[in-house]
Image (tube, rainbow, N blue to C red):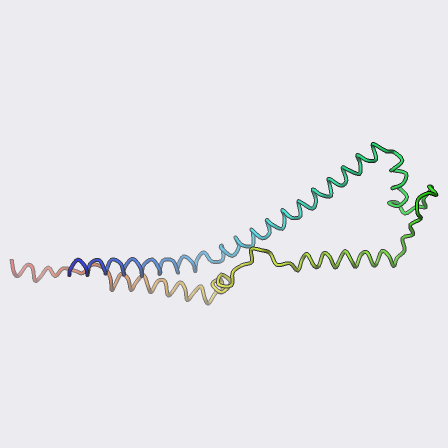
Length: 169
């Protein structure tokens, strides 16, 4: 029976102490954990932006390769790029007006806004948002400290009564 009591005290001591320590650690490290989620999200966003830049660079290199291969292509692209009148009568005349520029700008802004509205895949969990509140951190730390104290006070090894052993000896 004494072994069962010692075993149960050890289990309860370990359990209460571990939960208390975990809650204190969570209270202390929760803001750092939240920052970790933000850093991961920013890293993913940077990788997406880098892939877009790489695609633009590939398109640019392809255009340069085509220009080097066919010099007449530069004569066809230059007027449209610079906004000049095309000298080649076989090409369609493209007139860029303020209205078409405004429409194109609104479409681009709308597509940018749609991309920005996308929620990152690694959103900060709701429980972590609650834990990072100052009140919650204080309560978690106090409760954890209380559990550690309770585990030491209530579940530590029994003190042997030396006075009763000395009397019987």
